[in-house]
Structures are given as C-alpha cells and as structure tokens.
Length: 100
Image 1: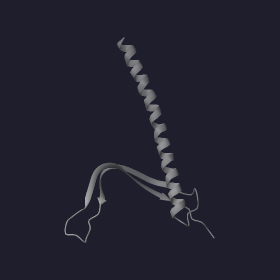
Image 2: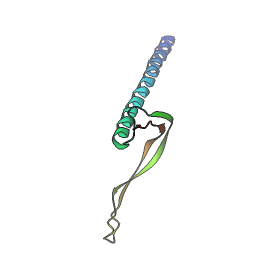
Image 3: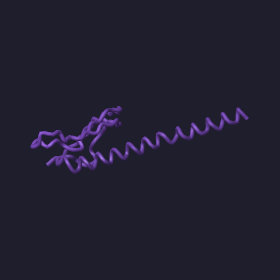
C-alpha cells in the first residue's frame, strides 16, 4: 500500500511538473504579445515583430503607489500612499527599425 501511494504521488508530481513549463511558456508568449503591441503603438520607427529579448530578470519588490496627490494650495497633507509587494520584471531587448 505504501509503495503504491508513493508511486501515485510521484506520478502526480511528474504530471504537475510537466504542466508548469507550459504555463511559463504561455505567460512568456502573453508578455511578448503585450510588448509587441506596446512597441507598435509607442515607437514610430519600430519594425513590427522585430524585437528579441537579450536578458530578463525577475524579483520581488516593494512598490509605492500614490493614490491621491497632495494639494499644494492647502497646508494639510492630503497625499494617500499604498505600499505592496509585487513581482517586478526587468527585460532587456533589441528592436529593429524601419528603413526609409
């Protein structure tokens, strides 16, 4: 019984492990699609589908977001700040440019 349970757990771990790279690949493809759209809409000299990722890093970091800015017209500080931990991605990439 114990041997059967160990084999079952091992099979489940192998199955879950095989799904993880697929999810990572899906997330990477989604990121590349978003990046491609952003480059098309903001960089006028960008040649479509020409970017290539050189390097990428990920880390957990503390993010500070100003929800409401302070009104300089008043003496009170109305500024409202949110702080939270988030996954931060840093990507270095190369793009191709349009030629005239």
